[in-house]
Image (cartoon, rainbow, N blue to C red; front, side, top):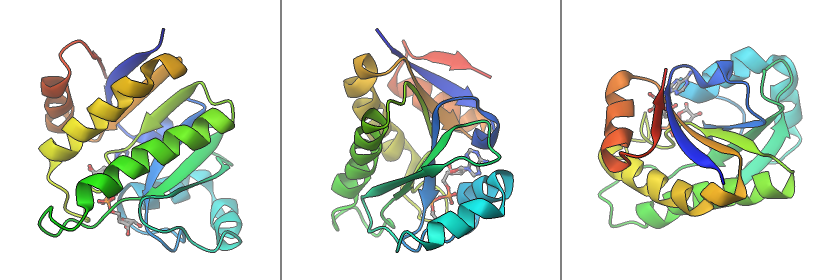
Length: 170
Ligand code: AR6
């Protein structure tokens, strides 16, 4: 039986089978966690992504991790938050579900998610954490370890509020 862990730190440092990137639909890199992942993976990642032809919002694509400790990167494109009435929750849920589906298809056992859409895309952090935890719990038994990777202690506390039995790690 798997577990959901909440980790505070830089997702590029995690030794898991796959990390999930909060990308944009070009898949050609950007700021935030996307920029950090591209820097840590090295230029081969961008080269590989160029051949993929982008990715619509809510969908996911998989690439090697190149110089990352993680074997794979799953790139998913979260919705830009407008007011919550433009399909944002459904699209964010699709991001998590499509990432889990790709992970299962690639025999991934351990997977770490960044907090998709909660940076420049402006999705309210508490709502996003609630949705992420809900989907992660649903997939718990299909994986050895599911990590919610938070970039700050405050974000980790938010996840822990939604899941008191989830293990908190630093
Ligand atoms: N490790 C873990 N989490 C991180 C890291 C890191 N190294 N760096 C930032 N975060 P964002 P989005 C957290 O803006 O909102 C990019 O330019 C951050 O604190 O990276 O989905 C893309 O190319 C926040 O909680 O992604 C797109 O254009 C979370 O990662 C756009 O931003 C997501 O913030 C996507 O926006």
